[in-house]
Image (cartoon, rainbow, N blue to C red; front, top):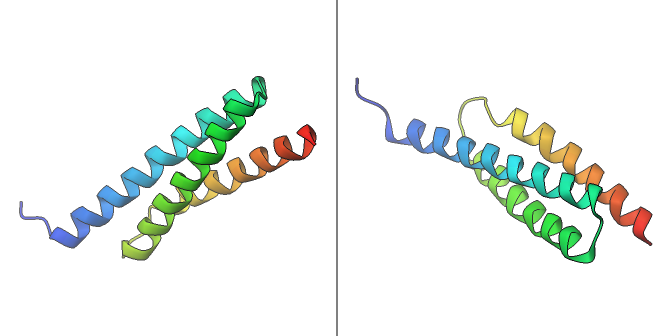
Amino acid sequence: MKHDHSSLQSSTLVAQASSSVKKLHHAVTQAVSQPTAELVQQAQNRLIHAENAVMAAQQQTTFGGVEFAEEILSEEKERLASLNVSQK
């Protein structure tokens, strides 16, 4: 079966976005359970990576699939934001 290069690239970008969002979820969960400055910073760094990965997938994807990553990204941003507020 022959695959179109752009569809393979799109599915790879979606997979990368999903992976990045999963790593963000893990980092935010750690920061919530142990809100040290180091873990919060790690979660913030993961957030930046996840945002970039999701944005790249959105720009290059011609089919659905990135919506789930977008939803999780949004939820994790809220969790991290609430953690930052509670630390001040």
